[in-house]
Length: 338
Image 1 (tube, rainbow, N blue to C red):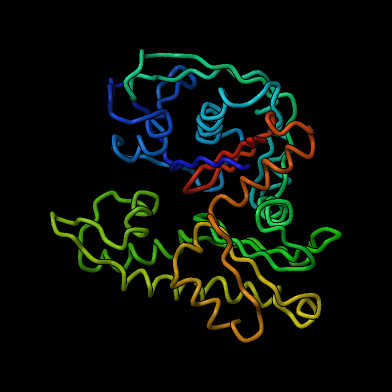
Image 2 (cartoon, rainbow, N blue to C red; image 1 turned 45 degrees about the vertical axis):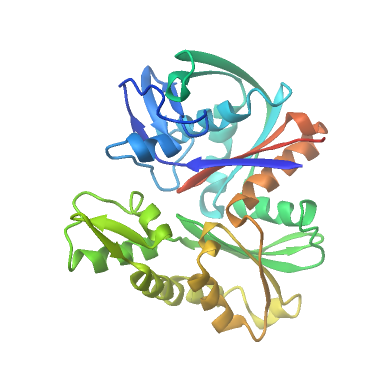
């Protein structure tokens, strides 16, 4: 069974005492990195002043290294060591960052964290010995999860993945993936920036960024000057604009007559597919020619594929981990063979 845990990819430097501010480690991630304390994930959302995350960060960036530490902390006690980790990047940066990611991950990690955030005894340390690392394109991880995971998909099918930072596509076959069907373009941040521009015409948003307004975009409302502002209509228009301006033009090179002779089956994944307004845009354009399915738990699909790839490499389910460092959410998946 695949066990996925997710947390916001937002981080912030924080040296204050945060005793009993969370229920558990997942919600109370305070990690020591480069001689500084950082709050991550849900704790950064609740306690941070200006939490942040670089878009499509590299393994040499501090936020990438910190988020991988946080992800490894969550599985360190439940896996057998040495562990095999698979991770990935958008297709556009995969080849550039692959070697650096392997160098960063393949070693014994000393993971220091503050357990007092969830009522324990302060600074603690966990060790994680990473014996093997594989780095694959994120969209390939989605393909592995569809074929080897719960969906048990077979034959040829398109995969369309929409996340905060990138939108990607691929045509997956039983023999492998077709490279000419791979595209990588702007993600949901485009739509969130659209919402910000609309709100800025009537409201002062201060120093709020696309990352900090991602939660409001999900909820459909936010407080401005102590008033609850409904943004569902703005969100609907933002998603329609994003689809027509970014996604639809990109798919013209993917959903072609040539590729349609191979398959008309499409799986929709990534956190963007939680928005029915966006799914409706796909249906409006392709509903008559494509058989579309939104996968269950779409934001965790890549991480699940990474874990299954680690299992293929290691042969040991209990020593197999997948880590997806997303621009909005980080997901870590391990395997419970019981």
